[in-house]
Length: 575
Image (tube, rainbow, N blue to C red; front, side):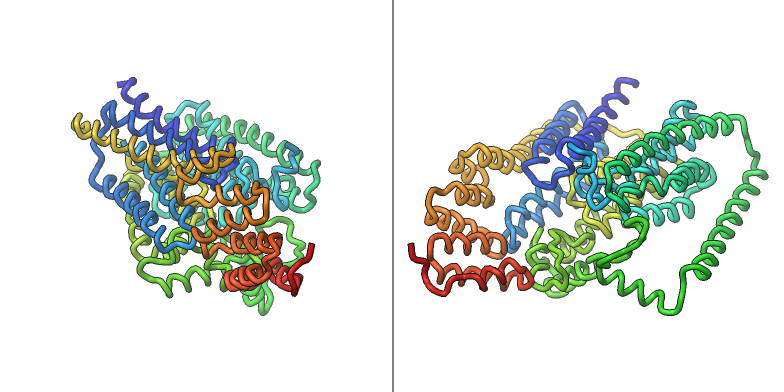
């Protein structure tokens, strides 16, 4: 039995390590050539599990995986109408990677690590970095709350929850605080374990509140000294969390409340929460609120403040989210059934944006799905995410700690993915889908028939080799200079043509390569702009002007295009 349990845990542990390798080694890169080797490893790992004899999945789990695979198929089909076919293909492959993750479990200078005073290491996007931290917060809290768990495990769980919260605060993700607050409301509102979860959660939150100033100091100064102090603070907080966690675990083991005292403690917690909420509301209206305050916040939300005296990024409401979501929902309104094609939001936004931002995604998994894949893609995504939640709720209500941890962690991640671009970052997505699969795992199950397992394993190997290897191989061949082979390995990619243009010995050679790239992605403004500059170097000014005008149609607000048109010679250049 122990060997069987270990065999079931090891693949999950290996894939969890893969998620952290994607974060640490690849800095959370969304470039397909960086994460495709990990996807191939995950696919082969799943094939090995299937070949060794896999458990029969529940119909609900099979339907969720089928919906995720169907979403990948729909994304692949959208290549035919997407503005960026290679990225649409990459999104389909990434979705297969995430399907593998859920399927497995069902069965330099320190200052350089900060971006605008926010922790951006190992993942270079602070919001994704925060998500990689916070996905583990609730599982750590649940482990710390288990009275029968070893004292050392509970002590380390409190330390882990504290360090996770400290990492989030250093990354300063507003989406993270919204998501953790919503997930906390769901957990404490629905879980019968709420009283056991409250002490470790409050211990971690209290320690982080005490360290607010040093953890957010890099945002205010950005100096190396404050960065080092923030890192030191995280280590000290983890140590403090271990200390208070040890005391909590020892006291909790000796303190047994009967039914009556448990009921009294529950009501005391409710009264304390109501009092704290009333005090917070009173403090808000006495110190913050003034007539017109809500109008000011709405204007701030719609615009990014040029200057701010806020003590952290968390207190700055302004962003470009309003304009990004406006464009995304408008695209869905214009293309309700099939959307504009996977990964097509970036080019679409440039055409109608009211901001200087150039986002590749809509910063919301729901808006991304609606705008790029239409109602068909959205329903497939909803099925893949909602179906696994059914056993979560049942296990949550049954006081199951594993189900509670999965429900809380996945609820957090889904809320965060609704307001930030973390869905496309494999280092975040793999962790989420592992937890999603773990939440539905367990119970007595029969093995799949031998022939079925063998056939599934073979199919997974074929899909992994066909979907994951060619794009990665093309990227490697491109970086190695074998451009002809790179083009053959991945006919969709424009990277070999862009590299060929950069290496071309003559302007005419660069023009020919970039024209081929533009034919593949005619709605990508960067390629049009690069082709125009190549025409200028080739002294073909009429074609250069035509390409710049097309580029301006694709991105009317880009100042480089305006400057290039203004500075374009009126007559052919003479040698």
